[in-house]
Image 1 (cartoon, chains in turn blue, red):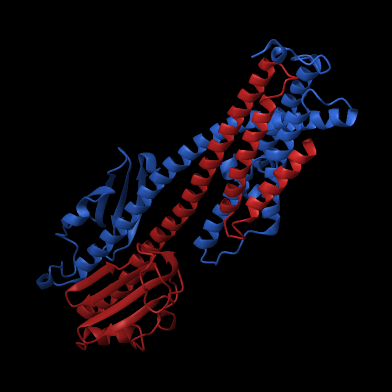
Image 2: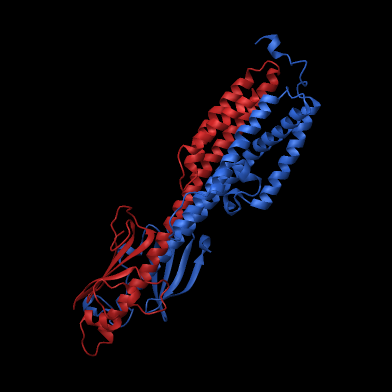
Length: 254
Length: 213
């Protein structure tokens, strides 16, 4: 690379000049304010989809708007309603977000750097520099926070999913006990009592849990020990009519 | 020249954004726009790097910071797409778990009380089918439970149907209007496609309960 290439343009601002550093400082202060306000107003990006369109994060990051739309669609499906195309306002907000943080800010910053002489261009440059710096500084920690939140949500959901499946299986066992009490002995039942009921092999240990039954004065006690999470479990009592009473959750299920 | 850059960027990214059309999700639109935007930014940075009026050090610093920002943005973008789709999918799975739980409780309870009546409250020695009809009149094949079930159930049981009845057995099919089953192509009884469906068969030997989808 030639010496000429290495030399700063004498007509432009000096390398890392005071004005340039000042711009960065102003930008950093605004960044901190925006990030702080963003967290206060919108909260964690992963849990703030109801706030889409408000707060700085959705306006800087179109993917937050899209994620909010996708999760909103999931809730719509969950409720049994049909999906409709995204609202015009969401489309516009997404496109404007891309235009502002993806095109306008970096283009003005990179194109006007060292060239902005007129006050209006200087002002445009400062604004675009602040926007670009804001985007650049905020995207790294917010991405890291989102990553951590993602891991936490998945772990919490996995635990809750295991608990839900165990509750379902306990309900299956409870109905088996009720059926056993009804059926006569000739059909393998207890003929009016739950005494002698034994879990079938297919239900005593499943992918989700291992179940142990004990006869009690008021019914059959069940201890469900999770097969996925050590020390996590459920205890409950099956009434003779198949109702489940006295739920107790242990360990991670609490 | 700067205005031209802006104009080209707005037009190319805007066209890419609208190319996938109006969809229920925004991802096709912003992903298309994002790919074009990435190409635009690479071009912008390449041109910036060739500028002779800035020191090499300054250009290197700017390029490095820009690259870090773009990489972080791409990772956040992809991560958020993956996470939001995961959460949407998980909502569907939760719906299926809830639906299975409701049917296991409601359908089995409703038939086991018939079995209990048959064995323990059956002075007139009625058949299984007759006991069912006595408890849930009129007991015609094809009946939806909305017309026969007693009140007090957690959900209106208009998605549970009596499909067979005789002296020796009673068959109910329950299919959820929207909670999905295992197979999206499954043809459900009397209605939707791919949703949760269970079949319960009551005989004198007990209850057979099968999750069909």
